[in-house]
Amino acid sequence: MSNNENALALPVGTTLDRFIMRQQEDFPYAKGELSQLLRDIALAAKIINREINRAGLIDITGAFGKENIQGEHQQKLDVIANIRFKRALINGGEACGILTEEEEDIIQTGNENGKYVVAIDPLDGSSNIDVNVSIGTIFSIYRRVSPIGTPATTEDFMQGGRRQVAAGYILYGSSTIMAYTTGQGVNAFTYENSLGEFFLSHANIKMPASGKIYSCNDAYFEDFSEPVQNFVRNLRKNDGVARYIGSLVGDFHRNLLKGGIYLYPPTAKSPHGKLRLLYECYPLAFVIEQAGGIAFEGSVKTLDVVPQKPHQRSTIFLGSPEMVENLVKNFFVPEFIDSHPAINSI
Ligand SMILES: O=P(O)(O)OC[C@H]1O[C@](O)(COP(=O)(O)O)[C@@H](O)[C@@H]1O
Ligand SMILES: [Mg+2]
Ligand SMILES: [Mg+2]
Image 1: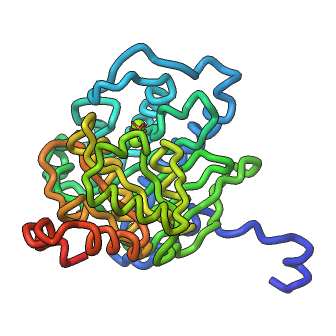
Image 2 (image 1 turned 45 degrees about the vertical axis):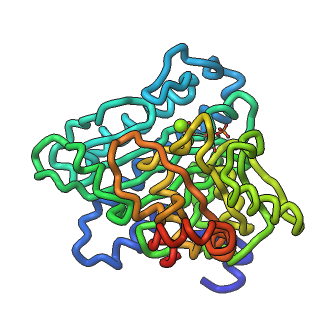
């Protein structure tokens, strides 16, 4: 295209679809199933984006009136998002099973020839739904280990964080962004409402090595272990900037772009952490490692945590590498480091 033509008709950019197809070309054996799965997730995200944008105008705000497997009161949008993703994955045909925050058991999609399973947090940041604060979706994809042509099994989901073939999130904020990795870096796409398309807006994201931002719920500060309290105190003393939206996806995305650290240590209320390993911690750990950051559970890297149960919780410290290393190497007591040799791999 000539410069005049580009000046006359500004290029709109690379659509998510086109980017997925180009990435697929890197995998000569690929048949397009993972590409289709990513497109199915993007489609559900577009529909949820439309519903979130007009949530106050249609009766989809407030509590749904039931509790989920986590013992949390479901919001209507939690349930709606769960339905939308299930439907998109069932109709898409590539996922044989789904594990979702909103349901206890694995969902059999009926696509027994599907090669993948998806673990998903359909709506992240539920406490912010009705107050127009950024919320999100988090997803993690594995190639199944159970035989093709049979129902999905728990084993398909319990392969461990390093077996994810793709992971990412959608942020429904001032703009809607889908960011994901397939192990070849992290790219983010911004949704263009009028064209109904996601366009590449952040190519090959690299997280700043350090930063000033720390994100943790200060209300639990007294519960934090002394090393973590000292780490936060030290940040406060050294121009640290406290930012906590209370939506993991929102806090994560900001810190990914600006540098920073998100901490959800053990608390009295959540002694094993609050966040869920399979559909919150693992996927964001995959993304952050691909962007040059570190995700740490407290004694090992998050992606090296061995999964025990589908809905298990985990503590997490994830962010800019220098900040996580500083926490682990300078604030964790030597005895703790000695008794947790994996720390030295940080
Ligand atoms: O209110 P707390 O304890 O700080 O927890 C906030 C965290 O809980 C979450 O809302 C949990 O996710 P869900 O909303 O998907 O349940 C995170 O998004 C957020 O970071
Ligand atoms: Mg969540
Ligand atoms: Mg959720």
